[in-house]
Image (cartoon, rainbow, N blue to C red; front, side, top):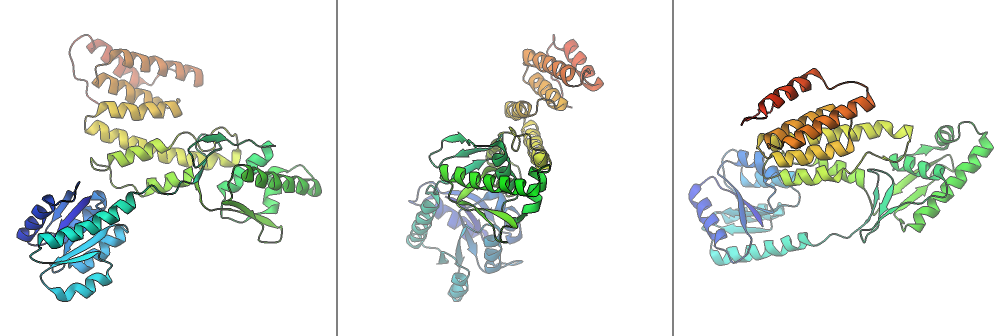
Length: 386
């Protein structure tokens, strides 16, 4: 259980920390101690505590206001107030605090509070209900609640593309004329309309076959358009974007969370489907992921965790093999790891890629670095990462 303590007086803060560390409740970790309430607000999201013990009477920002702000930043956090003035109890519980401790805090009373916190924390740890997942990274697949990934089989390629298009515009009204113009531009209106009805029927049957009752196609405007509604089904792209947006600042305490989100990207958006209308979204998601990959790699390099940076860059290379800078970064990383064979391999792969794709040689900067590296390689050296 991750706990943050906030009290403007150092003695009661130290006493509470000692009591918590001696508690019978296992796995208590004090992740932050503050005598400055404003400083606590600045860092609370990075710390991601399960519970916060707050003094109520403090300068700058009192505990009640601080508790409200913390719950705004971290809706799932539990608040426990500590104070020498019991008249604040009503205000405290109006703020949905889990408990209220009078100073000096007594060990027996604290243990009861910790038992309540542990019970709530264990409930939060329970495995959430599993949902069907629609995977759009790398292609159009479905993951069943038992974890099996299936390639969705379609009677026609047109039905598959129309479903992907509607999924891209889920919860939006898509007008019938827009669909006809995009998917059957050369057919007359009657023939195109019949093909549309057939495709919609095929989509509904396919969704039924895969047990995706939570995905429904409605026609709210008397057949003048359609809306795809998604409930109780997870869309991997949507999930990834949400996780990416909510990431805390990148530092030692949050790097594992960043790594998990980085690994969630498993390929281009609808990567096995050559749909022109998907290209802008594909490029947008690609740029977001590459930006995050660059941040993660730079963090590892700054902290001299070169192997972790290599793994990030290797995944970038697998998914986007035509990025010259990626090969150069790996060359420099392998040099820092004294892996001469890997440096040579990356240089060779770079030359081959550039010849096959663009019929050009590596940039002058890379050639200069490589020649310098070859000259220095026979003797002990410490190549700088620049």
